[in-house]
Image 1 (cartoon, rainbow, N blue to C red):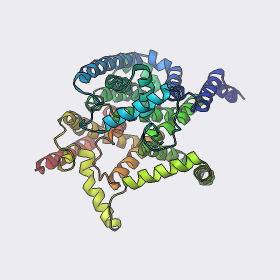
Image 2 (cartoon, rainbow, N blue to C red; image 1 turned 120 degrees about the vertical axis):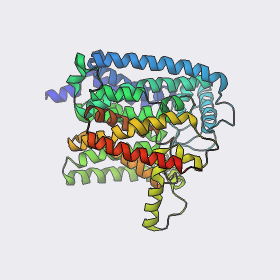
Image 3 (spheres, rainbow, N blue to C red; image 1 turned 30 degrees about the vertical axis):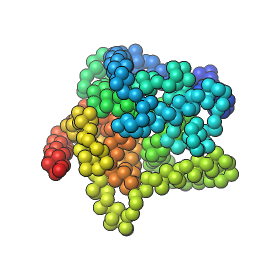
Image 4 (cartoon, helix red, strand yellow; image 1 turned 90 degrees about the vertical axis):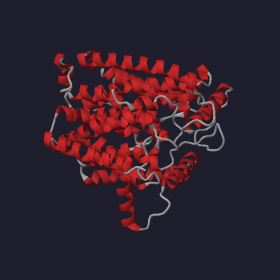
Length: 454
């Protein structure tokens, strides 16, 4: 009875009403809905983790996040002087498309016209898949007007919050909250603090934050959803569960494979803990609901069409049998883990020197410590770790078997932060034999790849 009352506390009731109101008004007041999608999870985290934020580790990380935001914000203003996503012919080209499409949505909203999200065509009808970034950008444009610096400041806010999200995730994964609150926990021997510091120092954040693209934003939403899922399972928190249910479809609309990879991990966790009969029943009911929604509702049918179109676009041109698929995956491994060096042979016209610091950061720190942390988590039977591990594995499998052929330096960016979570755990739980074996093999592999370039 007491647990039921705690679940139905005034705070949780208010969150449920807030989420239901935002969903109900989504077609009438879309800007309110898209703001709610991000602000409700943020408020849930603040309410639940206030004790952590007041701890020595929380205070130190809050200061680091503030400094990161100031740096990224200043860089955004400087960068905007010589870079405009409004101009065609940008290096990546996607940033110009995002700018034009978000501006079209903002213009429609300002005139009181709210296009249905499930319709796809010319702007502002963009469909549902891979366009979730456009809506909050349009909400910002509604206030500031179409502006490159506004998009870069959104990146700045996302990048500055990543260390704190990684710290929350580490708390839930390793269950070491008491040590996180201790005065002596501000040390790289604390996996929570170590993971956050490694995240704050990751050089690739400065590269992707300098373009008005959705890669930084995708990483932010992915880590936020991972944090909420782990918090729901670790603390049995209804407020986290509400926020996760609101954020999951949103991540699906930003990058479908990022959401699916996390969903695979979230489904694998109960599969290892509960009876198979119960899991089969839940899976059957879920599949039945999915079929009914896609078959008998127009938005669901349009969404299914867009999913199939995206799946076809990701499919490789021709794979002749299982052996050819395995060979393709093997050939894609250097491209997946050693990018951007592997990209020099493909469609990038010039070397991406701006990504080289991040590349070597992963070679020398992220990957060796990350694999050591993965080994330590598996050896110590950390049950919740199966969720990020499965997300990493499924994401890598997708990039290796799809049309990317492993060449996904942009698309795999969100996975780098998951590896840094394990890198912090590996740093605090060193396994010298594993670390040096991985380090030597990986460095030799990287050097061999570099020497093979023409």
